[in-house]
Length: 298
Image (cartoon, rainbow, N blue to C red; front, side, top):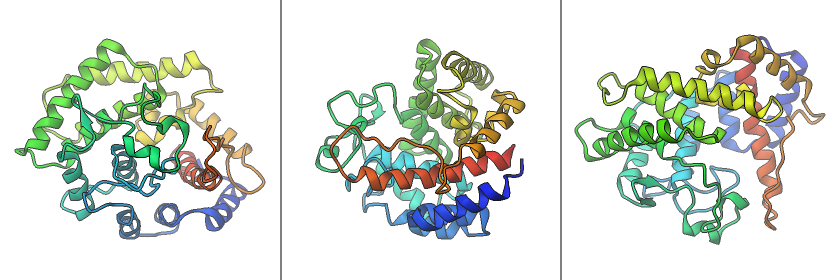
């Protein structure tokens, strides 16, 4: 679907006025013939010496200490721009962090970490308060490892075991959280790109996952869950939802554009941190990029 000229021009103005350099580079890459190298150079600025990511790469988490959530956010950007050179220093650093055992407990990379308490963050990143208990970055991070790590290495073997267990737990428990379903879609996308990965019945897993995503959308209503919420996990969303429904949402997105060019989003952190006001514009910029990619893909 071709976005309306008004939607595109207003979105561009918002991005140029409000986006942080990382999201501006993403915008340029997707819509103005920018380069992946520009995105990577700015992405690397968020990477710590231990290979992990921090420094508000996740706009609602301003921790300067590396976290699994930061690596997860970086991996999503790499997926978005289609960058898969596993020898690149950014990816090698991410693998080094994931192999270190830091923030890895009970065979899972932690959603929230103790150092979050020391920096501005949204309420769901609180450590020890429950956070977002249904959300677990482990399946997505395991997929990233399986796609990029050396096949005979210890980290790959660990991720392989994690992925098998994660899929088994998924089939038993069938999570009902949209973000968790996205994590499994990301795992599926990465594992499907690994031809020698035969530990899972991918056809059965895919069938159940696609069905659960559809059921989740139907049971929660279109006001809560929309096809675009799963689009960043890959264009497989068009194999899950009816394309006509996807097009209807794309039209609604354009109609909902605010006067400043952004899309409606709540910036409430449910905390007293004033940085939420800055993070809100960062989220709006990221949402615009995702929304425009979604509209164009239909």
